[in-house]
Length: 546
Image (cartoon, rainbow, N blue to C red):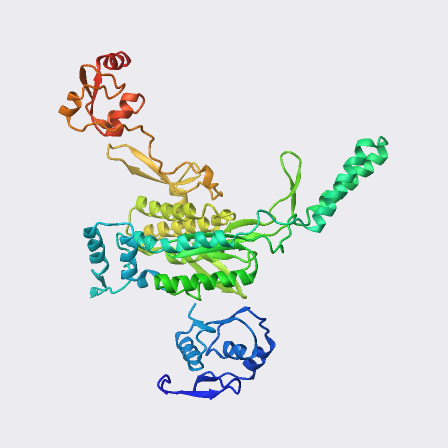
């Protein structure tokens, strides 16, 4: 047959006349696949997913044996997935069975140029700009001093590549917004029977406390109330199995996205399948099986270097108001995995790992390549690497674990200095330690000296709402005016108060001398002009202030 490749054969399945393509010298299905297809049950109108379907034997057999509505097979190996697709086509089951190779696989390399240009044309009418983008996409790239044509994708590292990637996936963002609105159901969970029962018991005790006068009886009632209160903390107030309550949250960064749902595993499978179909049909992209995983909330899901999970704990703690509450129950946690900064340390070549009795031991090592740099450059390099890692992972709940990274980096620096000067670490620490801090003195341009110290700021978790060192622009009030000096004078309107009068020009020598303390200075800073046209009244006020 035309759809057979060399080394392949067609075997009869002895069911509904179905047949399957197999390799003569490769994997062939056995009795386990037959038994599994007989054991699994698919009810009427149900959808089924086979993870790692191989040559597609189980979806085909289940289609023959059950009343399931649709069957999907996911296979990571392209060769096996292709064989399964051809077996499905051989039996004419394309409308009942889908075989997919299921991260968006090679996203930046597989962006379809025509689809991207079509998306841009929806909002941009300037054909010259569209042609410029097309030229950028078709310009090709140089790798290892060899030129390569680019027929698809946006070369990573290009100036506009991230922007074009986000424009391309804007369709996915809009799709997920509409999908979320359809998926969400209910405002809050139904309360559990335990929670309702315990609340009723506490309420009845409170009623009794209002009328009971006997001290011993009141003490007993208070003891019972506290016992019921403590017992209530062991149970969730909302019913986690409430089928009438569903929620979906979607977040994306470049080609990586994370979806969190309150719902069943079946819901997650359907969502994954819908996203896969949308990406393939609308954006010509393939969902990657290796990275697109369905994970329970109590297990960590990796996203942008963080491990995200829902912490389940019945530990209790009193608030500042004296109310007893569970500490971490059902709260989302951002965690820093041990392997994350371990890879960073290995990347920087500052870590040596030794195995003794099956246990892993970490040891700092020197960086010979830095020995040719001066003292300031060596210390500055270590500081920047530590601060860079800390600034990225400062939101992690276990951010304090970076102290181990700081320890390894510190002793690696000691060894690097010791290697440079051919001495011992103790001598290096004795020479450079000042006031308990490792310091290197350097000279400024004006001839003065300053000390650069090794990072000692700690690794405390930061609250994103309290981070102050952000690149915020100063808030200036800007009023558009004429730009030409002659036009500004002809307008005969004060650029401060708006009064119509004879104008004078107020000017300063340098813009950098402005501090933004007065309204006049704020206006000049906003316009980036050393001059401002003002009336006589405003000029007198400025003169008096000066």
